[in-house]
Image 1: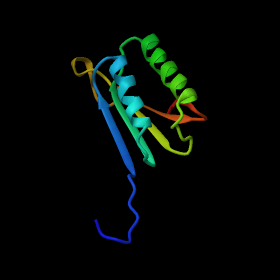
Image 2 (image 1 turned 90 degrees about the vertical axis):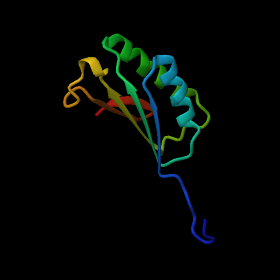
Image 3 (image 1 turned 180 degrees about the vertical axis):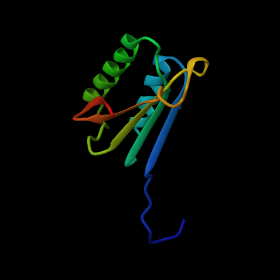
Image 4 (image 1 turned 180 degrees about the horizontal axis):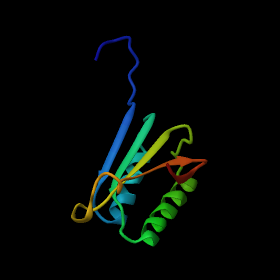
Length: 104
């Protein structure tokens, strides 16, 4: 690296296509990274109740994590599982607004 310029990480992305616990583990790693924009890519649950539970867990972490900076942008990209995906209408985008996960 050259001397003089100041470097920073602009985008940090975690992709976890496993179960809800693995998604949460990667989300915790993402929160510990200093970056202007953070993105978590994961498989959506088929059942809406499980998707809601994941959002509740994320909201709980956001309200209790020491390194969460509300000024950082966090994007969540929920992908459908490949066996029932159209990839046009089934991708769900969410972000953090007022310290809570919200649909876009």
